[in-house]
Length: 487
Image (cartoon, rainbow, N blue to C red):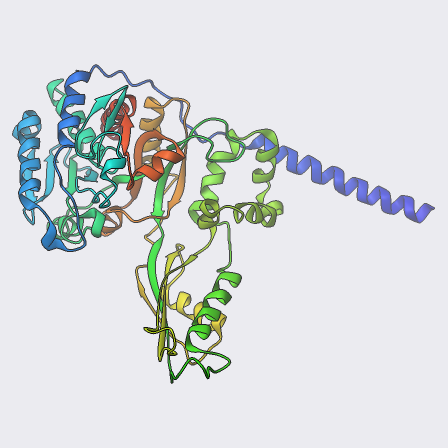
């Protein structure tokens, strides 16, 4: 009995120490949210709404086939900007790049400071043919009704272009003058990669030796019920974006008549390879921007969730297993595999001589394309299937402990005082990746409060935004410029 009592005593002491340490760590987690300084903005709201409504009527549509662009419509949009924002176009330096991309330079009084850049794009995706009748309001109508503004670009991303210019026009009318240079940079082909818009802007500025303290583009937004255990809406600021790669798996061999198939056909071999990849998956690891997201969110969580995330070194396997249950959170912690195209065969009774599968991968920061290819080859374990991997790796990861990130946090909190602002890893692509070359930090944030339904409308049917969101976006961009001048 004495021996068992000693063992129980040791276990009890260990559990007590464990509880003291972990509970203490939980209570010691301090909020990383700045105190809001409520933004005081006196806009002519009706005029601002009219401007946005009209901007949405221009069919500045990006097509994969550039010859399909209606470039006169892009020219008319640029003329609209010139007419609508006279102070901006009179007092700022304005330059066109490749005819349709725009650079605005607002010179500051302290030229020794690095500039900041605010960037958006004014091209939009097409409306899927045959779905026009499904829109409650016309996709290029700019209709304003029941507190909502309708049309392509309300969320992606004319709201950014117009929000920035409305903010600048208002500040100029008030006599505001920035200390550091501020650049506004607007692309016209972001939806198809930004090669002639943002990339060309970056090439030009790089030639001139212009580098930024930070560039802010579209990306994350403020979303309700996003992080478990956090009751407030959470604003996610992208500090990196995953790489986008294409893997092509191809096998070639004899075909023949389907009446005498081999046990393992070309289609079967490639299908088996895909199944192995889906069953294996890349290793999940809560690190980088995904880990930092929860470091920022943990102090705002309910006690139970805060306890788990404050003691991640113990509970990491449990956290990862929870995150892997949902596609959106699984994508935070691993490179994802998405088979998208399968090409094989032409006739029902003839075995194809070649089969090809195309897989889209979104690559985690720190993961190279070479490592991705090696993982695929080792996983499928079939020497007769050739594997090629092309695409881009993830962007660099921007700072979250700097005044640059805190500026965006503060500006957002000044407008959305109850939002919890956290960094995150962006899964989709944006023009921000181009600015990595000339910016110390690139951030991705659209200053609107949206729902999961809004996310599906961004490139879909019935894209619209509330008037309050639009006016708050204007206020946010004003706050970003003001907050930057305090650093």
